[in-house]
Image 1 (cartoon, one colour):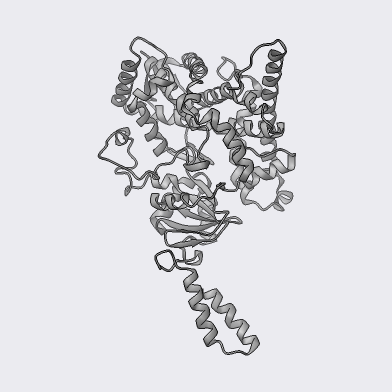
Image 2 (cartoon, rainbow, N blue to C red):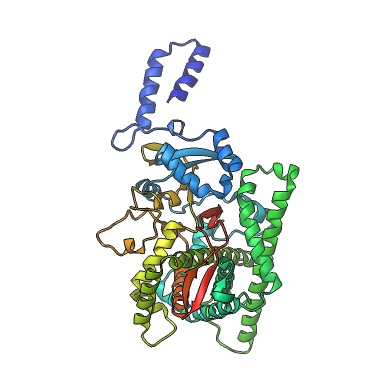
Length: 508
């Protein structure tokens, strides 16, 4: 309203008219336009607290904040309250770190919710002539693919059909763990093994074929693919912050980013083409081919093949980090809580009785195992913050008027570590999810997001996690590295361990 007053005063000075009557009318109009549904005056972004551009840049770059973005959420909540603004390069973002306010944002989503703008991801696709996938597309294009994939990835019965495939991958993982064990059962850098496991698992679902991640010797192209994923994630934030014209002056970050994506797309395309060729040969032989596996299913739609390539590539990326990070943190915490580990093992054995391989239907009778994964994802959400852009209209959140097309960061790490929401928030307590008397706000911990743009692979990822953890605990006692120390998380776009985690796997 102050900006309206200033503009009007300047215009009236030029015209020589008296300001008072018109100013009063304009003030009343501006106040009524900025009132909420109950007559309260909504504040503007100018009135929202937050760090200066210089101090935020200092936190990000001089203090290593790029790897501590999750902790900056907690600091922001403590310093500014549940809502604050910050400028990240050319991007202004509103941070929301309260479950009730996050709910307000989510309930004002439009028909086609828009995620945070992965600008550098989109720039790469435009440069190389690639299409967008589920993570990068918006609007009706996104809705069409989401609806198609939902039939195979969101319906519980459809997901249960993958348990045989995933159990075969888990069996190979256990064999690989036995192969990797050093004296006293120590396995170093367990996260790398789970990264291979995650890639093999999602590949088996996408391609109905194996790519050798769990072989005694991992194929060279698979190793290069994984290193390219790591490089791409590391370079995503720097390339988003840099204006495009800086790519010419400082080409190295952008070149490294593009080369990583080139490898990722080429790897995925090679396996997609291989799978489709095999299916075509089966059809020529008169064999029946099911559309349950996602690459074949997508290829039978009216989608352009470039759209199939992009969607499968992005699904491949999304599945790997979810599995590897959650598996690593789960066994890290269970190694430090042997009584809980024993209780989960007892639960699994009671459900399976004489069987050694669980099925998808068994998981429903393993509440402690499910609560453990839920607690791990509360403490270590794979994506520490989610984003939304209110692309359709202005919205009202926490007494503020958020203008259309504002980037809103939903600070999930901060809400899941907030003592006002979770008592003893830094303690690993899966029982908190089993205590009916202890309730939490439903938007306090959202590791897979919520609503239309929630993680489409959630059910498959959870099933793979449950099957793997159950089998590992039946085969091994998992113990901490005797020489290990406490490991903290760091942000690499996704949340990962800041240090290498070594664990002992002792045969039962």
